[in-house]
Image (tube, rainbow, N blue to C red; front, side, top):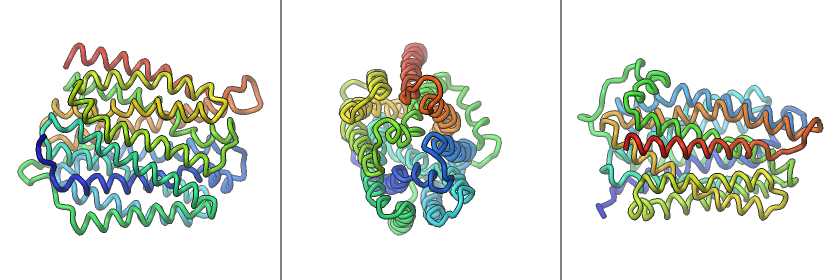
Amino acid sequence: MARTDNRLPLIAFIVFIDMAGIGLIIPILPSLVESLSDTDVAHAALIGGELLFAYAAMQFLFAPVIGGLSDRFGRRPVLLGTLLVLAVDYAMMAWAPTLGWLFAGRIISGVMGATWAAANSCIADLYPPEQRGRLFGLLGGAGASGFVLGPAIGGVLGTIGLRLPFVAASVLALAGAVIGYVIFTETLPPERRRPFTLARANPFGTLVRMGRYPFVLGCLATIFLMQLGAQSQLSTWGYFLIERLRWSPLEIGLSVALFGIAIAIAQGLVTGPAIARFGERRCALVSLMFGLPSYVLLAFASTGWMIYLAIVIGAATGVAFPAIQGMMTTRIEEDAQGELQGAVASTVGLTSIIGPLVMTWVFGHFADAKGVYFPGAPFVLASGLIVAAWLLLARTIRRYF
């Protein structure tokens, strides 16, 4: 195996801190929204969906800009700058006295939500194509590990004060920026940089450019369907567990931490050996199949053990994303890897625009006192989306890879 660049641990550490900061606020967000809006869980879920929409809309619009800037000026200023702004942003949300201020904080977070894309671009800068899938998995595992620490601590801190997790998130982001400033060196050499143009550094221009590569476009469409299904969890998780099982913020935080552990194992430990043995194509297709039983279990869960079993099974789908990323990087020029990661981030951001509105509406419709009561309905929708993603990826690989 080729030697690992000594910057990889720091890149992974920055991703870890960034995701831990995001994870810290997950357990307390439903309760905070309820307290600021003085409403019930079903209506708070709708407001939570609007908050996620604001975040995702900004990520969708600005991820290609961040990716283009990293192709022009390098990865280091993008990584450090986003972390520094996030530190200030979390501090602002810790103080936010109204929903308006909370929305402003989420908008800023969305603009700065491209840290992981810049980190993935570092992998493309430093390593040959045959190693990238494994290393994308390692970064994914680092991010998932942040979700192990973040929600668990957020759940504990949330029992002391609903604003305390935002303070902790601010400290983590600031620590990442300071450490990175001291010891992180640039990964993109000047000769591989390219001019920045708004014609390419926007979500529509980037996605149109990706259309020149049928395989990449098929993979992006697969990611879209995967992530749209995942919004059933990201958008409604806390509200679903409160409504269905009456779980506390601590129990919600621990469940997210378990998911983080399982994803960290799948991406950080399983992805590399699996890709080395079976290849990226087979790993992507097989891992996607685990999403279906996971979502079905969640849809009909009536006890805690069903939730935990669904989490463990669903974590196996975590292998698909780095495997697909690895395949895509081989079809794009080396000076456009940041643009590719911006396209991936925009695709994820687009699902985060559509998903929260759709999933929280479905949850709210089936979780109120009117009509059919079935709070697991968003996971039924996700089951169909994961089947569609598998069929699309299989067709794309068969035709273009």
